[in-house]
Amino acid sequence: MKKTLLNALAWLTGASRTVLAFILPILADSTARLLTALLPIALEVVASLADSDKSGEEKRAEAVDRIRAAAISAGIQASASAVNLALELAVAKLKESAAK
Image 1 (cartoon, rainbow, N blue to C red):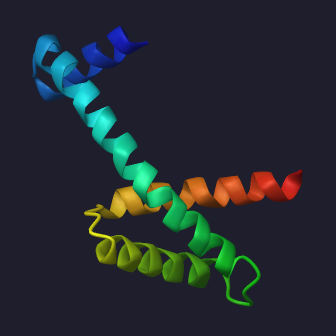
Image 2 (cartoon, rainbow, N blue to C red):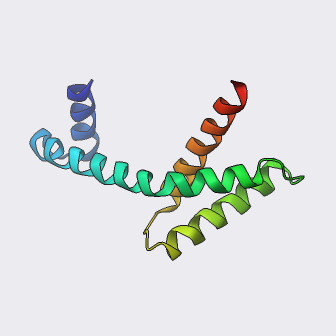
């Protein structure tokens, strides 16, 4: 799978497989560290909004704002996609916990 991913990315970006083989682990590690920092924040925010009377979209918008603000105050530089990923992971975890 890794070789296929490298070939696809090389074809899409025009970069060599050697360059991508070097960069991908760095990006994966960086993403993992970012999510490790964001996920506890997202879990807390999602849990606090779970029983709210707000609509799903209102909860999502508030959660994104609260996660982003908490990340900034904690000195975490997180892109919108990282915040959204942390939010989705937290929602999935909350649903998984509720199902048990």
